[in-house]
Amino acid sequence: MRSRLVLGSGSIGLPLLAEIRSDSDELVVVTDNDHQASALREDGIAVEIQDPTDRSMLDGLDIDPDTVAVTSDDPARNLAATIAAVERFPAAFVLAYAGADPTAAQLRELSSVADRVVDPAAAITDRLTQVVGGESSRVRQLQRVLRDLETMAIVTHDNPDPDAIASAVALGLLAERAGCETTLCYYGSISHQENRAFVNLLDYDLVELDPDEPAALDAFEGFALVDHSRPGVNDQLPSDLDIDIVIDHHPPRAPVEARFVDLRSGVGATSTLLVDYLRQFGVDIPEAVATGLLFGIRVDTKDFQREVSAADFEAAAHLVSRTDMDLLQRIEDPSISAETFSVIARAISNRTMEGSVLLSCVGKLSDRDALAQAADRLLDMEDVHATLVYGVLDGTIYASARARGTDIDLGEVLRDAFGQIGSAGGHADMAGAQIALGVLDSIDDREESLHDIVTSVVTDRFLDAIESRSHRLLGTVYGDSAYGPEALVGPLVESSEGDDPTGDDVDATSGTDST
Image (cartoon, rainbow, N blue to C red; front, side, top):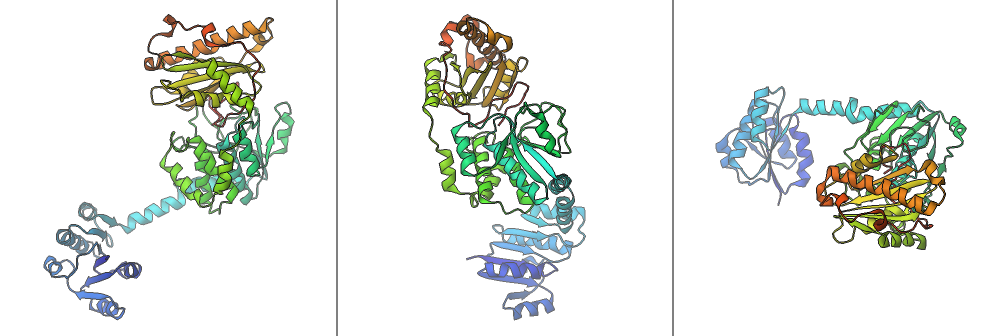
């Protein structure tokens, strides 16, 4: 049985009683205001006409309240009543109204004895802050930029993953409400079977841009970047292109310039940020958009296991009731091609261990995306704490790395290893890199030459970078071990195609990953 005791009947007393009356099996009000006492009794509320600050009076009450609310308008009386209530009912939750114009000393003492203090001045200040500053200010700024544009290209990073795609779709929804016509764009491909199912089943309309046709960009008045932050870095836009909007959860490695910038690395997915905007704009999120955003959050946080924040959980909770769970299940369980399994098989066959680090070259690729799946699968092997799987496609070495535990930050390791000769980046436990072979790709006697080039460039640099950051993974200095090129890789045979659900690979100018 819930029981409530209300001491005093000031300006917030009556509204409070109206709220808690139906939630209480027993409700008693103590007030020394005869007029209010009569009115409350006419409403069927039990009233004691007594001084609410009198401790002896409280001793005589036949009630053992779960909650005590102190509600007069006099700060001094509220403090006295709160102290008496805490002494008389130590197990009860005591809510105290600060009253009108309390002193700083009264507020401090009241806060020291009550479980919760309601200070009207602080409440008004907090509300004003929400309205004119902080998050609301950011929302209004984004809205102004959207309303200022008639057409806009929303560009994901190259080879977009679900987080980037869903974020673009959500930003497009916000832009549409602001009267801005948008086109969702990307460079590269959407080739992983899970990502293809994601786009097709949710019926998202995305346009693949051709880097050889820059004039196509002239059709747009404005540009927005989602899930990455700089033109020409992890996309193939001109590096000097003026950007209007940037929304990303990756920490930038260089200054980011745009009319509106929201970079919050404290969340696990850019989709989380878009859910925040949709909620603050008061948008009723359509089912297809909600399903995509929830999947984007789950993929980028590795089902809430990687770099996850409270905001990610809150966003997911908001999306669950709006999500088509049956469709989400179909997206998460696509069939895997025989070619992808072939790449995984070669990665297993060609593996070499150095300490707890597993490395494997799968040879020539027809599609790079199976590398990430292979790196994921090999991480499940016993005594393996980090994996690097790599291969060659169209004159470029592509690599995907995975790690478990906190011994190493793979994003930083790959930047150390390949940042000066290509591009690399990612998260602590999931990262990618790519290095252009350039003129070396045309060398005669390609099979052996590419074999040696790939081995020396990738293997040596990767292990050197790990050694500089963590001796625990390698155990001993790898140069003194039996490690060598011929032990690492088999012949560079033609590979099968496959896809990377995490989008961890990066372009030749990028310093960030594409998740």
